[in-house]
Image 1 (cartoon, helix red, strand yellow):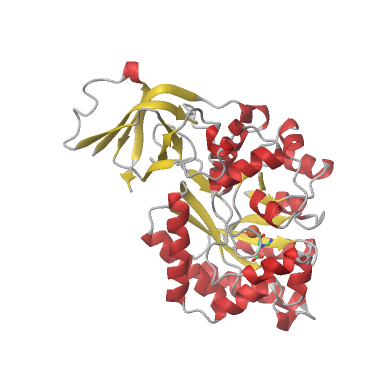
Image 2 (tube, helix red, strand yellow):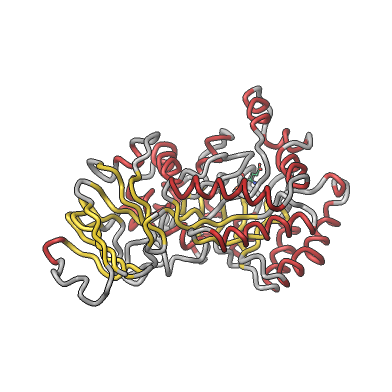
Length: 416
Ligand code: NIG
Ligand code: FE
């Protein structure tokens, strides 16, 4: 089966070299082809180029073919969202008004709200209902242009509820067209019953949760909320060491609420990414420069919690790559809309549209270990892409921040 998309006004984020990430000043150079075609064979991008070079016999080697005419419209690689908590029960808009009244994220957490509130809700929700609620969110982000997503556990906080969450993620992997990677985040918060002895909870994570999660092969990655009031560097170090021993690559929450040392401990364990990173200064930048770890900014959470913004420009000037993910979760970023995250990246972090496009596609693909198969328009990669509505320029995507500009979605070569 072959699909031809022809007369594409502009084919965006073309990479003949299939780079695994884009960093520093290269982030501002976006490769595109105007008046282009793209050919998909089964689920793979087979060819692309300018219309002048489209061969008349492009479909000669297959029985079945279709053509889509994209006149006036552009083709983008699907967004990759490398950081979400989209498996959760219910919602927490009640805390929204608490926040407006002036309570901080940490204060809400201390009162037993926040993550612990979601844990209670999740405990009382069956696996099937949790799956249904999460499936709806997956459908929502597919329509918003996401083609690959990482999902974390972390609202279970007990052996059985963490496993319940990870089984739901596994089921989503098997039943939806998006590429999904799963992360074990038992160290998301300390449950009430361990409040006076958090190290005992860390022991439970290391001695019971990690071995069981690994035995059932439920997680690709391991995460820790390494921050003020949650898990400290020593606890994070112990948990990451145990996760790595069980074959899980680290990806961690770091420096959201304070200079927690989280970035350095992430780098020490060769984390795929360190995420949030609002509190990033010279020493954190230097640690990242000597690493293969992707600094990942979550603009939705910083916007929603009114946090200081990570120094994106300074990081790119130092030569670092940046990824932008949604953090889709009920407490700090109740949206998985990656196009909106791109707009936040531009307005609040002063990233150019070109930089924001790299940050939400190839660099997030890297941050979830899939940049060899998605994240750019490259021959041989999986055909995860979308055709826009008619737009004047690609800048219009982050500029028109409230508009749905996606017309046709193609995942794994299939038109949805
Ligand atoms: O990434 N920072 C920690 N975890 C989530 C928030 C989870 C929640 O509040 O439910 C985050 O922002
Ligand atoms: Fe998060």
